[in-house]
Length: 419
Image (cartoon, rainbow, N blue to C red):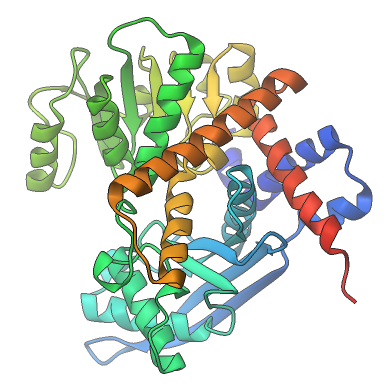
């Protein structure tokens, strides 16, 4: 069964979640047809000469799901496992993510089928610049604004911005977000997703009236989002007892020394083997007796197989589609409170929106102001979703989708059909 779940189309799952929201809203067949499929999908194949003189052919994608609420917005992923099906699913998720937090973007996603770790820095730059050139017909501050995702970095965004600027003949800083601050990036962007996870987790604990002190946290995935969330939750007074990366994790029920763990990771290149904790697997981490579970790694981590054994009271779904639809139902039956991905990991796109605005107006804000604005937007969205959940008697994921789909449907109906 686990193998079947891994093979299931990510896009079909995304459409299933849309269908459920459309059923609640009573959308017409015409409205469903307009929102259920992507607007456009571009596949490109391009050659890059490597430093040894050999020529490699790469495949890249850029997909727009819906742009009725504003320009397309979405990350670029560099992964050997990237497929068009996954890109379409993630583009749809971006549409709902932007809508649920009420920022004026549509949904997009893209990337290249490549393992960036297998390339030299020069080869990675050549792949990036050629890919950006291939999809440039879609890009621009008023059309489509990419951002970093798995396998890409602020430096990659700087190369794309520079490529777009060379084509235009002048600097177009608003053409991408997630850039280094030196070339128009925003303060607070690097930690935005983890900070959003933290703000939402604290609001949910308040709503759930959690009394244990300190509340305990397990974080699956120790990339940018997971590391930021772990540190910020610790600073907020929670006790981080377990973290993991792709190779495994560590657990100490009395709390982890995150500074020492970070030093260990830098020296060893992995989390496992940390002397002040016990080694555990990723599967074991998910089932620990903690207050808060933050899956911040990859898709399909909590399934119908392990959902009955989840002991966390709150799950903040920092990774896209970390919880499967089948697991959703099981968790809801067991009264596990879930903050769904389209809300939980929206901190990154919110601050990307701030970066875009700052680039367009050429006036930049201090990090404190960025964080204050992020807190306002993401907590407002949390209580709007919570209100919908309570009033319509829906779980939090369905409530988030209902809000988001309704907003996109409203924009689509108001704009009408051209010509």
